[in-house]
Length: 220
Ligand code: COA
Image (cartoon, rainbow, N blue to C red; front, side, top):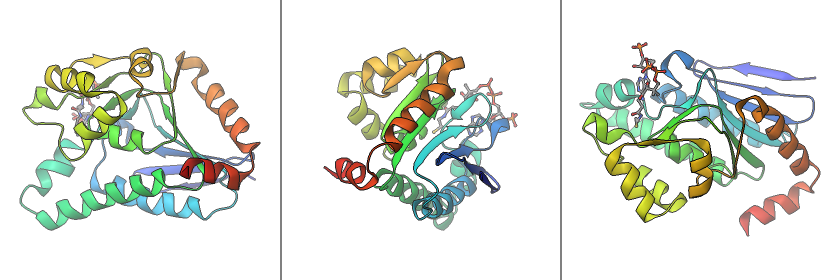
């Protein structure tokens, strides 16, 4: 029987096959990551890691965004003069992405739309990235007079390469899913209408493997 759970900013469903669909759930804010979303993700990822019914984790976004990055108001502006609050939010983001990156289970990012700034750190934590061809990616911080700080520029350069990181960070230009694959940021780009089917098909393929072999393969 499928099971669902809904927190304030994140919800998940474990379907009958064992795919855990984890959804950033702030569509009205294009799934911008506020502190609450990070705290929710910490709880959800820890819960799913120890849930035997969840065999493959899929991370996606509600509405037309995967995630528009850190919440410019709630994550940055509201914590400007509150270092403890900023630290807790930052720590929670690092914690859940590291937890995801070292998960024993296979993880897939299903990029259904916008992916900006801090969202690249979340993306990099997933094993496989399947994107809609028409998804929009970008390091747009420069357009708002800020820089892709934290780990973002490093993560981007690690995924793509130095030249691409420099170009997209300096211009703030956007690019689509096909370009994301070309640069090594995504694994596969498919038409938006086929995105979910493609992810299900890959998840099924992964669930056919012996779980421990998959876990060791990831570590190797
Ligand atoms: N932080 C906080 N709020 C954000 C946000 C972010 N990163 N991204 C979007 N939002 C909010 C908008 O402020 C708006 O809120 P409002 O309805 O209360 O005014 C709402 O989400 C919808 O955004 P809007 O710009 O109207 O949607 P759009 O579909 O026209 O454009 C984006 C979507 C993602 C292209 C655009 O919102 C954007 O460029 N966001 C900033 C992305 C960014 O620079 N991220 C880096 C941060 S590290």
